[in-house]
Image 1 (cartoon, rainbow over the protein chains, first blue to last red):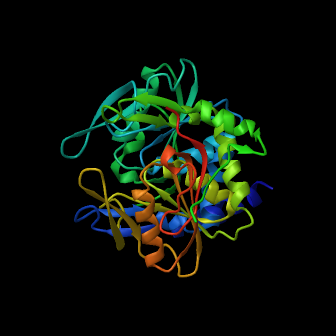
Image 2: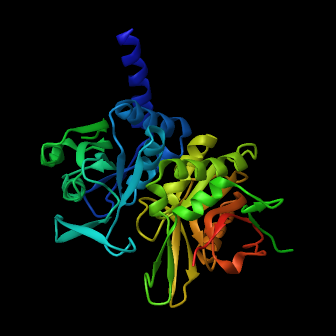
Image 3: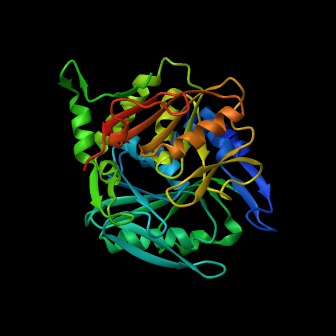
Length: 184
Length: 190
């Protein structure tokens, strides 16, 4: 039975992996961009992606799914809806109206900033962070900080794709990472 | 003929789900600039049942309309479009600000109050003849939705309807956009 389940899982993951398109030299030369929009054009692959995350997170008392703008907005809400959790958008500066908290993070060249609404999350809530891809882990680290500053407990980060060579997994404040596909 | 369908009252009975949706939307004055009463849907996303009901209302409407693709306008259209697409078994097509989509795109410019902006879609995302709905959180001037309609029609798609949670008062009592009907759940809060 376990083998059958694994095989079923493998088939879904195979389909997900092959639906992702690699676009060379985007946004700049030398970067092999992992494009999930082709996954979104395959309704079964998209559904399987969400189902795999939902299977991972159902029944774990998660009341908050935080999604990183903008591709985290595509995967986060369906997961939130399926597990009965709130969806909290984490956004680039000046997009969220009203009172926000901000967290800066380092980019390859320069820095960027992520914001979350004050009051979106209550102390003690159990949270999941969702994005399409983890590279260096800088953005996810900022996301974890925002949630922890608001008193939430971040259980895990979930991404469709990991770029393991960039070692983001080890930069998540000790939080576990769950991914569907690795890209080398 | 001008027609925008506002679901708030049918035969004088108000759908309690719509009341809850409207009540869950927060108005933030003077954002992004003085004079604008911003209708903030993020507070609705903090109420799982209300969010779920909003999605269900759209899904119920489009379930039997043979919709094969849902196009969502960046970024808040990315929150509502995918759950609707998944429930309908349809593709999800992100319509994005310039230079965000990798690979080959088509672009449509549109006029803002001051200046212009532009929306992009991937070449090949949609096939000629596909029946598509367009989702965004709110319709104000309709400029963005018009650009979205144009993008889809340029590749031969059949835009069945535009759907938004919120519509500004100018839409009450009827407005088509580019000949396409606009379906709105609630009017904006002031």
